[in-house]
Image (tube, rainbow, N blue to C red; front, side):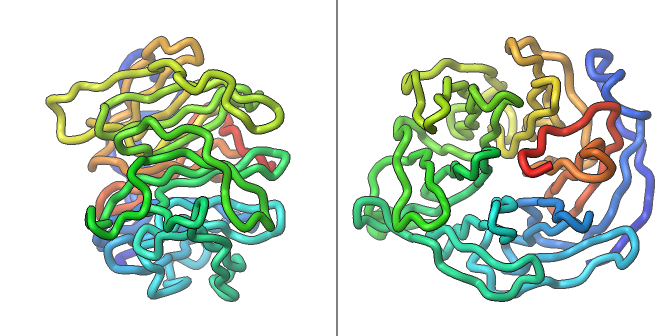
Length: 298
């Protein structure tokens, strides 16, 4: 890894101009293979995955970057648990695991649903009440090795032996996010080039399993939507073609925040969650925004 402190001029559409401080972003580090799963820890440091090199990295302004953990089984999305642990999706491990913030004490939380092995958990979030939600596409799993012949979105709480299936009619469920009031669950379906919106009950059920398409993307581009985040005003930020696509809560498209490379995932970070850290191919960037991110544990 090469730690950098470099400012890069970016493109931002008129509709998102007031959301950013200026037309620049900070390049924090580069030299990776494929970065994913950024997460800010309570101490202000950022951890993220170099998925294809099987490493978790830690980065801070004060100390730069260092390897937090190796042999991660292609860990991908991660979130902060109410138990003070980091909860992880392991793509190659085909399980949900957790670890301490320093990378130690790795535990398998579960790896099956109804006794069948999960596909390859991809991204994970949690609500304020401690309910976790994750997606389970079949990336990297040969058809003959699959036990499940659907791609689902699941919910669980710490201590459960298996998750609860919420919906299974996806082609490649990927990033997911909650509205500030936690009544709407957004899910990216990468191979269908859209984001779906579900009504979610306080009990953690989906009130409309069929949902609705919240946003669609150009199928002629290099790929569909990936990671996603929501700010405190309910605006939705999607890592997709050409940068970060931003939408109002009613689905109105505001514009694109350009990124130097194709983004894979996003994390709110910095003072009051006013920065957006972005993993993008072999690099990690940080944008300074005039809004605050919706972070359940803050």
